[in-house]
Image (cartoon, rainbow, N blue to C red):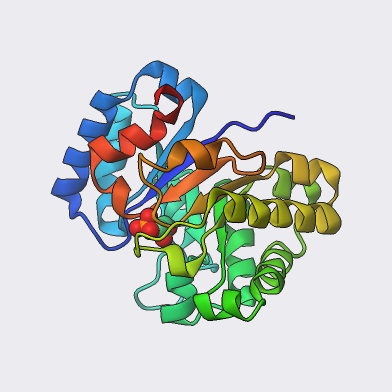
Length: 257
Ligand code: 13P
């Protein structure tokens, strides 16, 4: 089964809606229709930008996929400050990042919470990008694989094969996020292959063949080619470099390098 690459820009808490509009316009200008045929391109702005970007994408019939960075798992209720998945679906959001390491480390999200969110995103006909990844300490103590395995098993627990085959898992070693340090292509490939093996064990061969696995952590125009040439890496989740349309376009266009 051939998996279409997916390259996603996670803007984190950057770009107000004016800056977001400019960035998406510039990205659209840089990308060609061939690029969208070869790669699914998604942007994940802060919540306050989403309505503006939705309108822009619709008006100019852009093929950029709209994404969010997080959501709650309940449909509504007394959860001050939270955003329901159905609210995002109504804004034509297609992808939602779930369980980013910053959510896990800074906001206490557990595997159980991540699993509820993954299910809620799918129930609202959007695609989860579920993140996993180890800290430097865990890697040095030889615990990286066990942690990632647990995150994948628990995060995807209770999903059907079909659901798993259609979602995205992002492997982001925490020590590589925003640090300029990238995992070597071999180490990134080894962990992405591990993720696929865990999916095969838990959900079967078809789910493993379909699930798309992104690498994230200091992805730049200079390292994307080697990362994308690995068998089990189907895309990238890009932070810092996705804030700049030229850099992000250069990453999306890795085939031309
Ligand atoms: P950087 O690309 O800035 O390292 O961020 C990676 C990331 O966390 C994307 O979700």
